[in-house]
Image 1 (cartoon, rainbow over the protein chains, first blue to last red):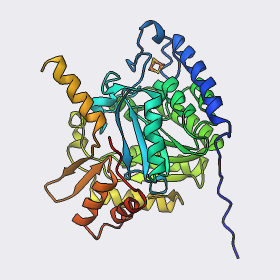
Image 2 (image 1 turned 30 degrees about the horizontal axis):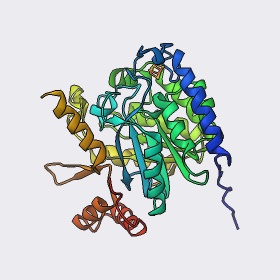
Image 3 (image 1 turned 90 degrees about the vertical axis):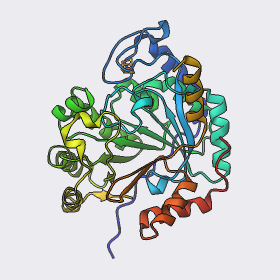
Length: 289
Length: 68
Ligand code: SF4
């Protein structure tokens, strides 16, 4: 009999609420010299300065609802989307809110925690914090975590563009990191999301997340980017994170400013789709629905 | 559009359950932010879509859509 290797199971720390409260305080203080993400702006958000994400000191949110569209093993999830992001992906499906940290409503951690607890009582299996990008709102996200039951399964849905400081504050707070690896090279990242040094930063975050939580990596297949983006991402995952759960998403739709880019005038072709999934199989990736 | 209208729109999009769908000319349907109720609708539209049926069954485990 061949036994499968045991799955890594991470449990967020049992005193998470108390620890999250303390971390939220530290995260708020860190806004005085904000270096939460790899843009490393060093601006004082507490004094009204803004960096590349344009976020202020207080988080806003544009969606909070129970959803079933993400990874099946995490569904149903109570999903809270915070406004604003530190990337500028032209094809962002929630571009209007993700590019605008002032979109939506003021985020009240207490009220949102009450809604999340009600969702759990009604049968939601997880609570997901996402954006935009939640890293830019770490103080509010951690305040929210401090008000949730220690036993709740929490998902951190991220673009994996955070810095060491953010990772240290997040350590032990979320059971699952659901992280994007969008671009397989820095040129595509620069052209489509206006971010430099993308690949190195994301890889650093993924390696960290794999040793500090459960990790699921997402890649959205983009028309015309199977060779330049998916192939290197797939090869790197196979070599560096063998067995990691990968959600390869084929539902690209030309949202937001996608039409600025010629290759996004069409949706993913059947042959690109087949090739991408074939490559995943060939490399032995652990694809999940 | 005045500021008042902007604010009202922001409020409604954050407080109501929202699911966006896109139907392409070839009949392909894309959806995101799928709520349990919408998953049930999409599964009815295409019963052969196994992935959507599995999501729709999640509705049975979820008692109520949240009062938003
Ligand atoms: S979160 Fe990132 S982009 Fe925003 S101010 Fe801080 S370092 Fe800059």
